[in-house]
Each structure stands twice: as C-alpha cells, then as structure tokens.
Amino acid sequence: MAEWLRRWAADPLYVGSIPTPGSNVLKRSNLCLVITEVGGIMTEKAVEETFAALFALTDLRQIFRDTKPTYQFNSEQREKIKQIIEKLRQSLDVIEKELIK
Image (cartoon, rainbow, N blue to C red):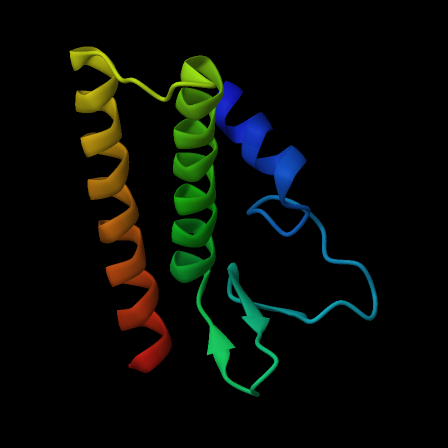
C-alpha cells in the first residue's frame, strides 16, 4: 500500500488515477497508454519501469546524502549501490524494449 501511495503521489497518471481532459492519455480496455513527444506510444509497462528507475535513483541519492561530504561507503552501502545499479539496468532494458518494439 505504501508503495502504491508513493507512486501515486509522484505520478498522477499512475494506474488507478483518472486522466484529466486534455491529457495525453488514452484509456483502452483498462490499458493506459501515454503518447510520447515523438508520436509513438509508451506502454504502461515502460511508464512503470521509468518510475521504478527514478525511485531507485532516489534511493541512491539518499546514500549519497548519508555519506556526504566524504562519500566513503561501508560494505552494506556498497551492496545496496550494486543492487540499485542492477535495478536501473533492468528498468532501462525494459524501457528500451518497450519503446523500440
């Protein structure tokens, strides 16, 4: 529930929200599609992965804040950074595949 609220607060187009008139959102058979600037269609999966990547970057940013000004990481932080980077790579792969297909 907390994750849903976090995403909903960050993204008014998150699944479950109601698109406003004039927004670039099409609703077809419960699939929310966003029209991109270049005229293509960005799938719901790509949008979700974009926000997952942004949340991961926020987590990375928090680690940087915690270690400021020396940015010396302990072993736990290094492991968390590796996990965050792996999540970012996975999200970017999904986004790329969804936008190119």
